[in-house]
Image 1 (cartoon, rainbow, N blue to C red):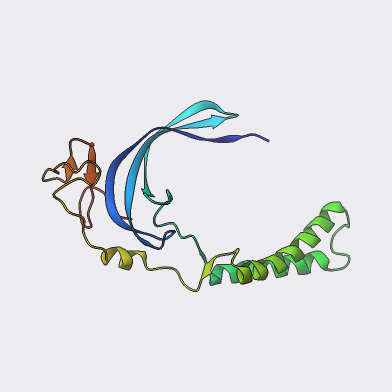
Image 2: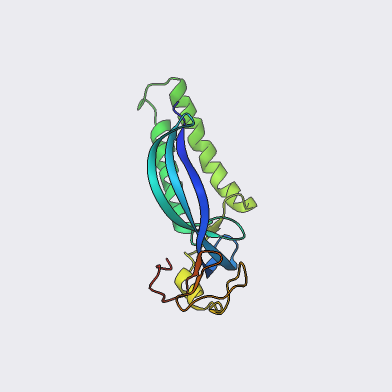
Length: 179
């Protein structure tokens, strides 16, 4: 196995906005974090990827628009796939019987039982339909353009705070897309 990943250096907040976090399921301040990313193999930094910006919720630290729940349609699709997989694996004479075949046979049956049980006990979070993120964001109040929420210093006409080196982003601002 090769262990790979991305190191993130020099985290800094460059912007903030009033947003709706789907994980917290409420109104939150989202922060745009700027990092310098470096790809690593076995903990040795190898390839500099460059600067990257990402929006994160100030409360939970996750992408505010990332859905924490799957839809019932997606769960139904995977149940159909598991049923088809189990039927094909349990058909007599269709595949050589070895250890891997038995592992996949039993794994497909465990998956068929685990999905409904996980839904029943709340281990698998699901929703009937996808949330209306744009509608929830449109209903949010705008933040004050008078002062910075971090240092309480004054913002200039472009909503930039020279003390904190951050920018306030509102709906409709040309600086950055909201989603």
